Amino acid sequence: AAPLVRELQPGEIGPAAAGLVLDALAARRDPVIGVATGSSPSPLYAALSASGADFSRAAWFALDEYVGLPAGHPQSYAEVLRREIIEPLGLDPQAVHLPDPHREDLQKACDEYERSIAAAGGIDLQILGIGRNGHLAFNEPGGALDSRTRVEILTEDTRRANQRFFDSLDSVPTRCLTQGLGTILDAGQLLLIARGQDKAEALRAALRGPVSPECPASVLQLHGRLTVLADPAAASLL
Ligand code: GLP
Image (cartoon, rainbow, N blue to C red; front, side):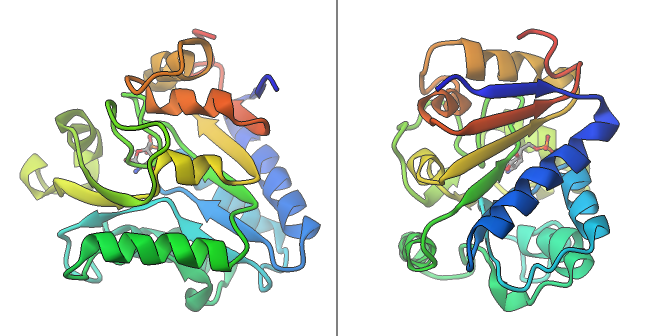
């Protein structure tokens, strides 16, 4: 099925995305929502918080996490999710899952993460941003299109893009744990949020280019239930 692309004004994206998430929450008794970090979904989380909905039946699974930051580091995605969703939505921290970057055997932590997603019944709706190099979660260009949760080496471009959250480029981790592209495609429904001019080329390549490891987000074309919410700048090359 062709993706549903909705071009919205910046202020409309959060409420529109929240509407989709609230529908997914209402559709199942024990809904499972996949959550992204980064700046793209922030308006969605703010709108969910403002909705006053009951989130107590849901489980939440993160897309990715840095490796190498000390526990409690403010830029670890565990802490970002605490600030962005656990506190504002009043979630039980136990209901919010991330792959564990502090384990000695990182691949084992990734395999366990895959199993915990499956045990929860799979992800009903996965929220996504897109990297300006076309990455999805932290799946960098060049990897397999059917990958599972694993250790990934961050590209210099991604580390530079995320440097704004750290003191210097050197303090940006070089490794992470990320859901694979295959993991992401298993979700029942995908919701991609893209904002700003610096996402325009990545969004064009993802939706209009060939499905190719060079643009990991191009796997979105393989999913039958994708909604893209983009502001006019991000949608400008579609
Ligand atoms: C980050 C995250 C991704 C996110 C992307 C875009 O590095 N790991 O999950 O979607 O890059 O981030 P932003 O929304 O801040 O542009």
